Figure 1 (cartoon, rainbow, N blue to C red):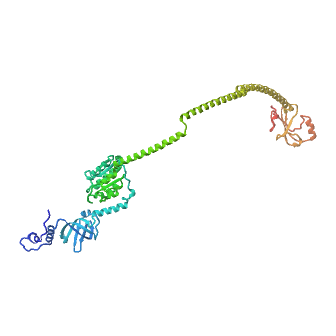
Figure 2: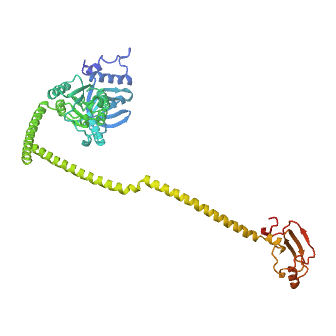
Figure 3: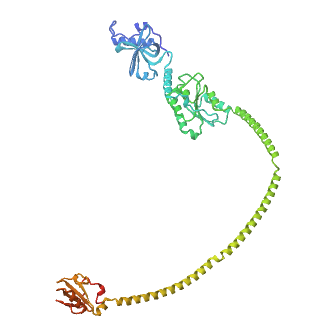
Length: 502
């Protein structure tokens, strides 16, 4: 129900606040006047007005404080922080905007101002500014690069469709794909495509399909909805949807709105189609065209095979005319085989005969060299050699024994003791040297004389060559001063040959 238009008479007449009792012309307080002004504005103006003007003196400290001005007036404006957070664009001084809200009088400051609920730029709306800003950001990050886009398969086996289950776009896609190719399987993912929660549901559906695309055997994904205003399509311009499409592992196709509509989801997707129907035609091949192409290809293959077969037959006929008949080849091969077999038999017999004759000749030559004969001969020779060895050894031993006897007799005849037994003696000096001349002695020298039955110690008192010779010729007349006879003693150094005990 709309308010009545502003009536100044109502403010001046009985429509205003009652005067104090007992005082007809009592003055009003400032607060009462401010209330009257505010009430007049509320009663006279619509509940919500839209004002176009240029932003001036903008101050953003949580709440927004600014002025709207044109060539003839200035209007104070205030936007609370909760309202300003939903404006969706970056306001600045000098920007022409359209502000919507209620006009009220603020008594504590004596200001009449516009309490702004929504603010949008003139010419390009806030959503359009947000769209352009997000496009610039994503383009700089490479979301729209052609190099990263994956090719869409020409013959997909299963396609997932993310859209509203009640929308007309889904029905158009299903009808088109069923008409073109029923072999393509369809998986429908029902999500909201409009409203505040739509972007989150679309992004969640994309992430779920990305995780399970291998298990679901998906070849491509179609994201679609019908036409609408930019506000209706805004869910497909959210960053969360763009991120989900950018990271999607398999090809994605986007068809949002009409042909003139463009969303960020379509720019990020691997393929953009103008309408849902066009997207269905791109994903589902035309079975009739496939049949025509298959039939044409079959005919071409058949014609090609016929040509190849005809050419092969001609080659076979040419070769057959040049080659002899197989039966004749086999018969000739049999004759050759028989002749070769006869030749081999003859050659084998001849070789066997030659080898047999050679074996006989070798046997005659090797007869005397047979191991048993050679061994018997060797045994006989060894026996004879053993007999000769025994005879030679006995003869040798007899000869050696005779030689030993003769040597023993000779040694006995040369035994010094036997010489001593015949009356001779041997005189030695104290150091054991044999005295052969008186020149070896001097007075006082100690001597030791060996006889057959002992030794005689003496001391030289003098020497006389003549007398010495006469004494030596008369044994037993040696001039000895001191003679001591010790039976069985032998002077030191006496040779064992003269040991009297032997």
